[in-house]
Amino acid sequence: MRTSTRIAGVLSGLTLVLGGAAFAAPAAHADVSACINQVERELQGGEAPESVRAACSAGYSGEQEQCVTGLTKGGVTNGTAVSACKVSAQ
Image 1 (cartoon, rainbow, N blue to C red):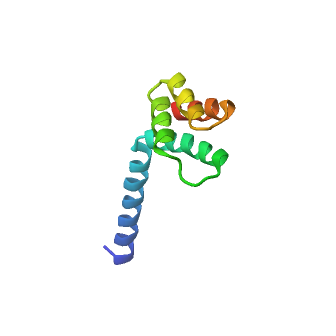
Image 2 (tube, one colour):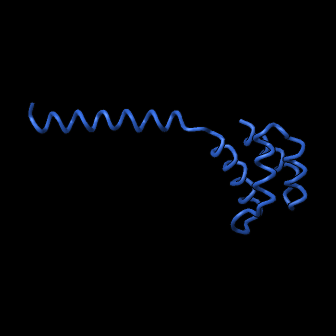
């Protein structure tokens, strides 16, 4: 077998393996991160405090009311809190 054919086969296999891993990765982190990102855009104060992370995690767990309450206590407007908590639950 030619070296170029072998390299192409290896690269194709690697692409399939890594692509499959990306699809199989849990979406929890992405959803909580999306919630945190929405809050950080509103607060414009850099990295979100731990209370925001905890509230977004609660939203991911299905505790929407706890998520909204936690975010509004942290200074986030109700509209942004509701929106961010919905994103975390997806």
